[in-house]
Image (cartoon, rainbow, N blue to C red; front, side):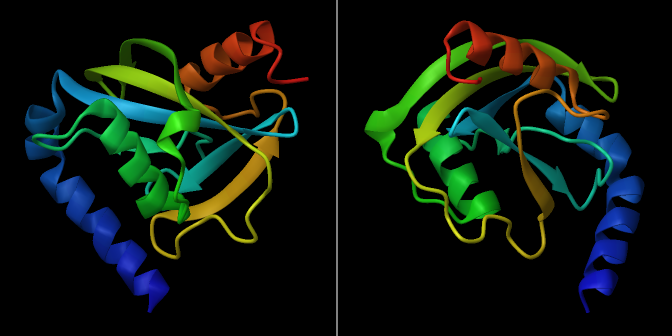
Length: 154
């Protein structure tokens, strides 16, 4: 059943890509850099299985960036994070697959590691890294450098 869901999702994505590009053009997005014991948690999702990325997504209507990143953590990783431990790491503009958007990246330092992070449909793999693995989004390299400067990654 999961394979069918993934196939339907990929076909739908390809068919709707032109509309998606119009919708996402110049959109606002959030990313989450979760640090545990000097390493960052990166994920691969069902759509881009070969790309390591930060968890995150779009900001909904009437939603603040902080609310969006907390929602994305819950949707993608099944994590309920404490807002007071969430800090802004950086913000900027990035280009991915010909789409440009503005982003805010938050950092969250975890004291304990949950048993299972990924959700069964969206996130297919996760890992803890102290360096950007091959096939990472460009923003991952930037984030890892920033986290090292702040002595959060060893």
